[in-house]
Image (cartoon, rainbow, N blue to C red; front, side, top):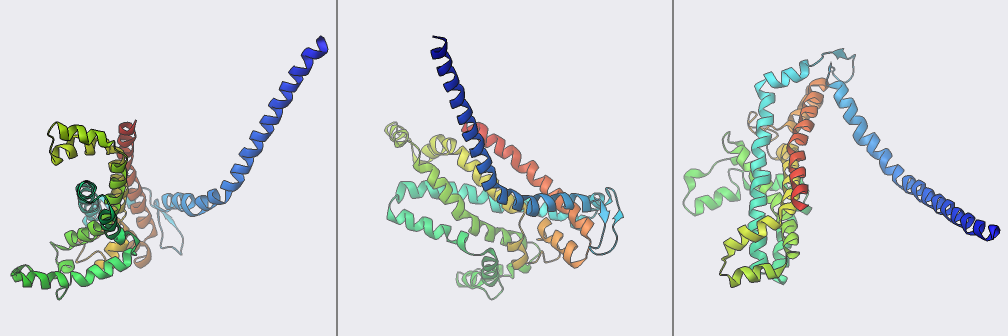
Length: 311
């Protein structure tokens, strides 16, 4: 009897040890697969991030000796209007890069789902998504031609009798930033529309049928059903587009290079000028750190609100 009781116990222990070894082996194999990606992330993301924070407390031209500056670089950013103005321009771009594409995307996706759910809707989504696969540099060059004084936009205005409104849109102090924002709307509208339309396809059609039986209009369905049930997708769209606005570089650099004056200068452009044109690595690093903090301060509450809504 004693022997028969010990055998099941020893067999159970043996199985537990075997499962533990197998689980340990799977964990080790998993980490080995992840190791190359972790090394790349550490070298190309974490290391530059730590070095940027370090450089932001020094005066350095990138070649010679570094001089300790404390928080002087941060103080300079807050005191020099041209540097502080870049942060203001970035937040103004949020309206064009985020608020308008997300709002328009909601409306366009809702209309497409209701009016053209079949092949016509798929074609419309493909056309709207096309700017996402075009390099942003090419998009900036194309829109630079369209918005130039002899460009297509001004030719259309002349054709419909609004010649007095024609101008070099990207060279106008008042209209350069909205013109850059228009390019951002064109690029990001397709992404928002496709993502929101995909979210709409998972909504229960019975909700809309019940609303229509009760006499609800399209606008009532949109406000009472579509928008509340798409808060998670809206949160993703807002997060992506806000980051695109605050960290904008390529579209602005190709279309205006931050001009005229500093009317379209954003932190990304200013960091490039300070680091590679003026060799002020410490000041550029301080502005980069402030940009990262700014993105986190804006994006983290959006992410938290989106997760709470989804739950």
